[in-house]
Image (cartoon, rainbow, N blue to C red):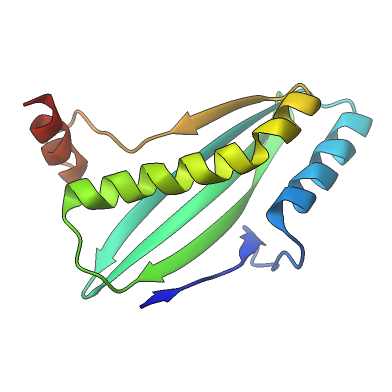
Length: 134
């Protein structure tokens, strides 16, 4: 069973339109203000009992002028290995990046996609990294 949640601003304000339209309007406003922009997209997850909580973020960085973000959280009630969870994080990130890429291109905004792969052995993602490296 999966529970879909809508996009919201960090302050909790729900976005009542498709995220693509919200991003388009945000990019238009930032362009009018003359801000140089960069966007970073990523997903992270946490396991809490039987539930895996995924959070995907779209971070707008105004070069030298601060940043803001949109976030979408979703609870998934399905047992997953760490490797499966990491692949799900990457898939969610790539899906939203793909949906928005044409906007970033049209507004000449650089986009980065982030994956949660950690070389520090204290993090569970390191186990999956070691497994992938063989």
